[in-house]
Image (cartoon, rainbow, N blue to C red; front, top):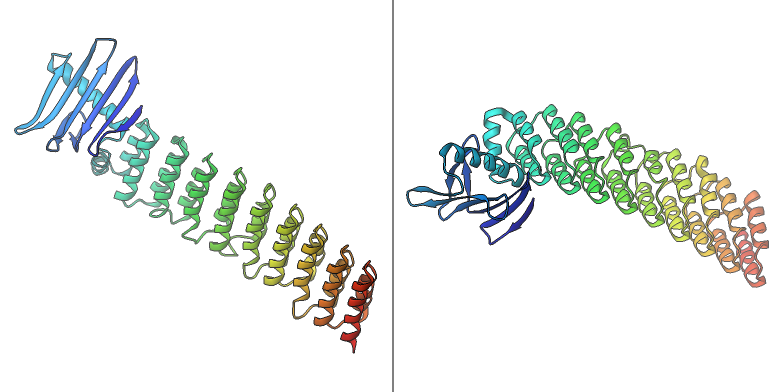
Length: 417
């Protein structure tokens, strides 16, 4: 079927079936009879034309116009009343099911006669995802749906619709009104996971996330659904939305970190890990997993930025210390590594083991200026004693430039005085 709008009140539709080509033109509003077999009303000045061609010359043409005394009908190609009624009924049913003509009136009528089940059964007979969306939306707007009916609607939409845009539109429409319990959320998530378009899947998942109140099972299911996405940007956007809305108890941070395993873009991974670092009450285990994820990044800038954000927002727990400094040492750029270690040095209180680990990492810097600058900063902010002093001196001895080495050692002497 092809669709083309004419002016503001006229549209045309054509389709082929069984060797027949059917063309339809409609102007104005049209209302059909209760059984969809005839025309009940046309708006003033409105008309309906159905033309069927079965060859070069054979075919049938039907035209209905709203006249002063009612609907005026004109036929070409058929003569018997019974044959005409049967032909018109067949074509009107084909028309409403393939084009969405009079969709609002039909849904309202079916809903009144048979309830939501009747509308869902009729949707299964429709041949166009576009028309299915019209019916699903009208049903969602017109009826108060219980949990079981909502779940059935969502499951049916995921099973029957092939257009990612149309399905995502149905899901987002329903999400704002009817998806409020676990059963409907599960059905919604299953339907969303059938979407092959990463953009549309992200759009659908965002609508599920937005109201909040997600259980651990649904939050985990959303993370799992993102793993099938090929676009790192779309996946990251979903995970960030989830981190902003989901209760920490409902969304373990390690599940989010696990969702980053196949992510190739360091920029997008950084976006997610930065959002993760902003969560309150982040457990040491999750922070440790985040450091491991940062270690897998190739970009020194992105890795350093993630680590700086964690330093600023999360305490550096002893259980994650080794993972953190492994991530620091994986940074190839001395400037970026010094940037992270400077953030660590900027913390008001550091335990001795962390201070030593930081100084040992400083000793692995190759650039004399970067190493000396970091050591001067550390000496100005922390008491350098015992093992920390030994690590400081050892780091200073690795500096190749005599000037920079003297600068670092002078800072230590001043601090001790």
